[in-house]
Length: 389
Image 1 (spheres, one colour):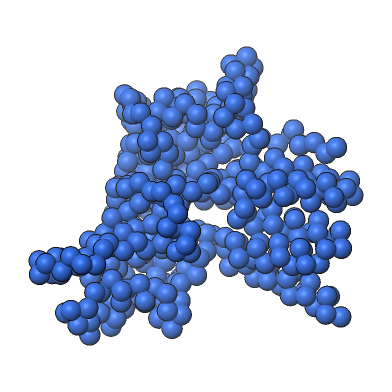
Image 2 (image 1 turned 180 degrees about the vertical axis):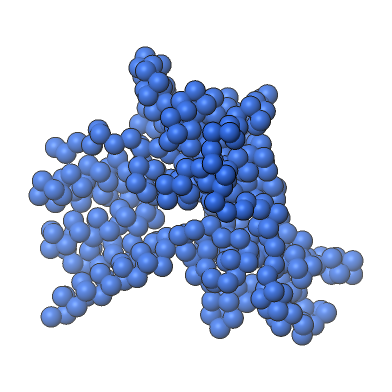
């Protein structure tokens, strides 16, 4: 029977996620007490929270072209939505390789859910549409980069009727949700309103996590710091700041930031996981064990638990067991591309070409970057080619 490797420590971050939306909010430690500016080199690039929604000249030209001929009686929201979905106009691609500002997403014609929401909101406001934001309650999608485990949430936006139509009493059309998930999925999901400050904090926190994944710890500090200063209630940024401190050997500061999260959400699995690490490294095994016991009650199996067991089974040549373990992981993370890839390998080893092709297709469709999408597509074509020979 395969076992999980014990030599690696998985630090958990949260991206694009609203923590404890319905939790009781008690007194909160001031942000200033968490910051340690003197301990970090200056950021390698400017951090401009005010530029997140800024329009580029290309965006202004696009808006002028697309909306100059819109009839006064026509709903410009539909024109915007058509422009977003038409391959001949914007041709947007989902790509979670980096979190982009509105201008960067427009230039790349690509972005993660947060980047595309920011870009769409910037265009919508430019043409006079009321905009609000929603954090959608979805199961976290976990990815791994080195020794970081990253949990991603989901946001969308709501377009209200133009002010001119409201003034004319044209209230027949409801508010429209713009989401970059399939519409049938969105309709089933609950959500909660979030402020623009929180959206900007999400952006800054994502940038912090991306800097950590690249090994740029000082940059990560400044991005996480900016996120907390933008929205002091955004606890994901406190968790990210704690990870920065863990990477920097600042264990007391890491524990302080994590306790700030847990004071608002005692069952936050990311904060509990990271607190176990902080206490272990600080030479407090009894306290670490107590926190680990709390974590085990909330999350008996950590992210990728069954994937890692399945990979061990693959190495041992037990492909039947590997297939079953990957299936267990997919029940928890049905859209995780890495798990689908390994499930495809197990199916291939078992001679089930149909299942292998299905999992490869799912890996491709749920990939988070263009590079990963193209890699899975190539593997799928190769599998089809072998089957046709």
